[in-house]
Length: 454
Image 1 (tube, rainbow, N blue to C red):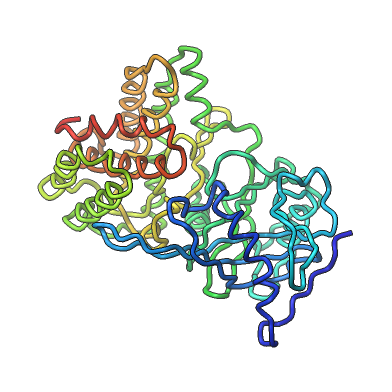
Image 2 (cartoon, helix red, strand yellow):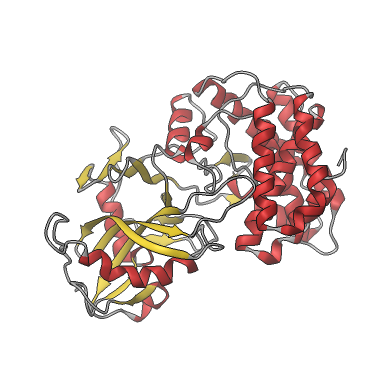
C-alpha cells in the first residue's frame, strides 16, 4: 500500500521542506516532457506554488519554472510558466510504473520514497474520476459536475499516449478527461466554449460534463471531462489513410468545411461578434510574432520582407467577416469523424499564447487558414509530395465553408494569405522547438507565402 503523505501547513516553520525535497527531481524531469514549453530556455529555478494531498499517496502540485530572460526584437518573453503535476509516492515502485518513474527523494519528509507521474497509474486515474463524481473542494481545488448529470463510477482508465500539450485519460470509452499541463489564470476556453455551444444547441462539439479548478495562487481551470466518441477517427488519421491508398479526400473536406462554418455561426450566437474583422493592430501583432520567431529560427531571415508584405496588406484589404470567438488552433487533429458526421474538439487555442488572447474575438479566417495549412501538412507526409491532393482539399473545404457561412474565404485572398502566413510562422517556431525533423514542412510554406500571390 502507498505511504500516506501529509505535508505540514505552509505557516509552520520549515513548511517549504516538502516542496524543496521534490524540486531537484522535478527540475531534471520537467524539461524532458512533451508538454513542457520552455525547452529552448534553461530552467533557472523551480518553485512550488501549491501542494495538496488529493488522496493518500498522490500529491497535486502547481509548480513555476523560471527561465533566464531571452531578449528578442519583439520584447522579452515571460520568464517562466506554471505547470500542473499529479505525483504518486511509494516506498516500492511496481515494474509497470517504470515509464512513469521520476526519481527517489534523497532528503526531507519524503526521503526514500519513489516519485512518479500519477496520471500513468490506473489506480490514481481511477481515484481522480471518483473525485470528479463528488462535487466539492480539496484545499484550493474545486470539483464540479453538470447539474442533474449522473456520472458512473468504476470506468477503467486509459492514458492516451499521443503527442499532446496536455494529458488525456479515457474512461471506459465513455468519457475523456483532459488534464491541462500548462496553467494560466482564468477560465480555459476548452471549458468555456463547449459549455456555451451546448447551451446554444450545437451538437458538433462534445459538451463538458465535469471539471476541476484551483483558487490558488490564482483562479484557473485545471481539467475538463467530456463525452468520448469511441467510434470516431480524427481527421489527420483519415487524411493520411486516403493519401496512402491514393484516394480522394474532397468529399470529406467539403463536409468538414460546412461543419466548421456551422460551428462558427454557433460561436457568433454564443459570443456576440466584437466588430470589424481586421485592422492595423492585427498586422502589428503578426509582425511582432514574426520578429520573435526569426530571432529563434534564423532560417526565416531571407523571407522576412515577403512575409511582412503579407501582413502589411491587411491595412488596405477587405476587412472580411466580423471578429468573433473562434477555435484558435484548428487543424485535422482537432476534428473527429463518427459515421458521416464531423465533430470539433480542443478549443483551448494555441497553448503558447496568453489566455486573454486565446479568449479574445478574432477573425474566423484564422481558423480557415489553420485547416488549409493542415491539408498541406498531410500531403507532405507522403513521398513524392502530392500538392494537387492538398490543393483539391483546400478548394473543397472553402467551398463547403462558403455554402454554409454565406461568404467565401477564397474571395478574401489577402486576408487569407496573411493568416496562413501567421500560422506558418507559428509552425516554424513550434517545430524548431519540439520536432526539428518536421521543420522543412512549414519552411516550404514560408517560401511560397513570402512571394505575393503565394
